[in-house]
Amino acid sequence: MASIPAERQQKILELLQERKTLKIHEMVEQFQVSLMTIHRDLRSLAAKGLVTKVHGGVTLGRTFPTNEAFSNSCALCGNPVSARTILIIHGSGGETMQACCPHCGLILLARQEGSVMAMATDFLYGQMASVKEAVYLVGSTVDTCCMPSVLSFSRQQDAQRFQHGFGGQMMNFDQAQRYVQDAM
Picture: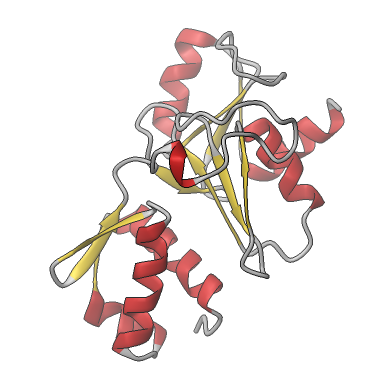
């Protein structure tokens, strides 16, 4: 299974997207690692605001941590970062970058070599979602800091409802990443 901490943490986040809660003993069995290893992974994810530790397990973080936990500017364009649209990239060397919006985040991800984990904020609910699992709405009438406007959603049905009211084109990760690169 995933033996590199970043890979294991990404898998934990993906499982939480599906199941909403995980028990520690289940993660120990699934990943075939020690109890302490799981606790270290969860402590790291909790410090980033991605999960909430509960007795005997973990749940997906309710909202993204306040901006004070990070620099207040985008690593690509320098715009101020908003907790509502932030995209976080955790590199293979332990470095963390943030983007002000999915538009910039998708461009940064394309430029990264060896990035191992990236999370986008659900525009409606503020929950974090794996960038590869998120659904993107490109070019809606909702203006964000960068153009074309790109919004991320954890669930396709939420993106569809939002699209109905505000327009735009729904895309998966690969499509959205190609779109913003072509628009440059």
